[in-house]
Amino acid sequence: MENNLLNNDQVKKISRDDVEIEVHYIDSLGNQLADSTYLTGHYLDNLEMPWKTIPGYVLSSIKNFQQSFIPNDDGIYLIYFTQIAAPVIVYHRNTKGELIADPQYLTGDLNKSYQAEPLEEARNFLVDYPKSVKGHFSDKVQEYEFIYDTMQMADHEVPSNLFIQTKNNVPVYEQPAGKQPLSQTLPYDTTWRVFKAVQENYNETVWYNLGGNIWISEKEEIKTFTIDQFNEEQKLLSSPLGATVNNISFTYTVVDSMDIERSVKVLFYANQYVTAWETPYGTIVSNRYQGGQSVFVKRLIQLDNQSVWAELDDGHYMESKYLNL
Image (cartoon, rainbow, N blue to C red):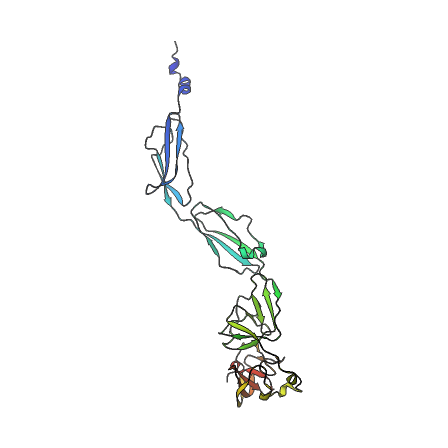
């Protein structure tokens, strides 16, 4: 007579899920990193390990590892080790490939999610960006790039008698929003007339044109001011080239003058030109003087604002700081 109690199929059917295993998630110091997982199953059945990804950690070892349901009062310990994730670098460039802000470094725990973002103040100028800006921190550096059209300029209205005065040696550029300044700076305490101005649409920075291809940012160490135009009598001078020291009576007063009668050179950019004036702070003349050019100075005059001007033999005036006197 067959003994049904020894039939394997029958034994399987009456077996219970009576084996329970606790899986712990701890660091190398024994600190709990996540809630334990409880597994139940038939005795000797296959046990599938419930792995967990824990941001900032990597699995380093396993204590009491087992692959089948065998009673284990201590449980299984998955031991994790701290690991620093590589940064995510976000670049913000204009359409010329130039950075418009310092690169952003996103940091976080390993495997933690992140999202790269464009510059809040430049969202309206965004023209190109990555298809996906989300991911997870890993052990490798990840990079994203956002492109903005920040080179848009608009004319900026300024008074026709606007001037700037330098409060330090300041850089100038060949074009507005230029990145590389010209080789020489404008000297401290010199005055320049502003011919026109433009404003960057992106950050509203105003750039002043000082004649030719010389531009300066309002953010440099300068101050702006206006000078009253000369009076009607001076406008009617038959020959501006005949202007003398006595004709200078705009805003400033002549406090001193000295005859020197000698040839000097223009101290300025070799490929740039220095502005000449009919009278100091009066009207700028079309004739300009190139850096390194020799000119003949008849006399020097000093105004009550401490500026010193050279009267040239052609009757024009130039600030003496641009001459090797």
